Image (cartoon, rainbow, N blue to C red; front, side):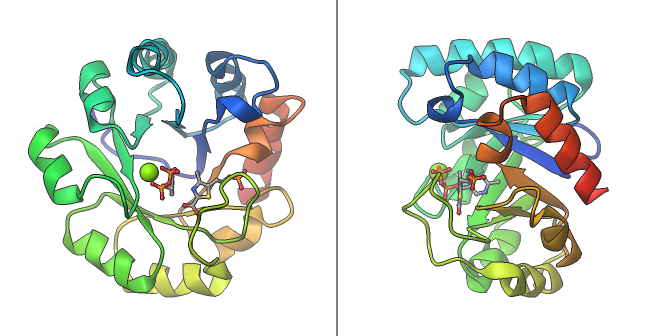
Length: 210
Ligand SMILES: Cc1ncc(COP(=O)(O)OP(=O)(O)O)c(N)n1
Ligand SMILES: Cc1nc(C(=O)O)sc1CCOP(=O)(O)O
Ligand SMILES: [Mg+2]
């Protein structure tokens, strides 16, 4: 497992095979990387463990070549199996305390914060970054907490010292606002994964967030 010396969360792609319009996740990631994504989270909710691991290995080869970290959604075992840079854990996933026991010390752990209290607890618990969960409502994930909005991003930003990434309902129309509210990056699913051309979509988002 290897952690890049500094992690660039600016344009953070979260995958979703159900939104990929028949393209493989590897294909979408390749295209998005050439458009400028800086971090990739492999999020597989339905795949078998074996498929998840095989896909993660193939994507990691692509990302390693570009120095882009691969984060695994939910599954500490998958992250360990493939030597990913880290994991992203939500409020119902494995506790960070337990994940830290299993993962090597250099592993990145991102935590979803559904409130200011969650963000403070995540920082105290040793999280490497926080996902503000969600900033806006999104059809991509409907079992979220209430949207925290730009004000939530501002409040969390001023309360913690670790990187803060906004997620949920972020696209070309509001990406700059999320950054202006103090986020270190935007995490997006549909704006890239479901786009006609993920490379162009990533490029356009990158331009918006400077
Ligand atoms: C960057 C980022 N932030 C938040 C989440 C959501 O995590 P979680 O609440 O565990 O929900 P699932 O993604 O597991 O459905 C995330 N994945 N990434
Ligand atoms: C994976 C995920 N987590 C969220 C959270 O609020 O924690 S929202 C979300 C999906 C974000 O998709 P889109 O960019 O298409 O809105
Ligand atoms: Mg989760």
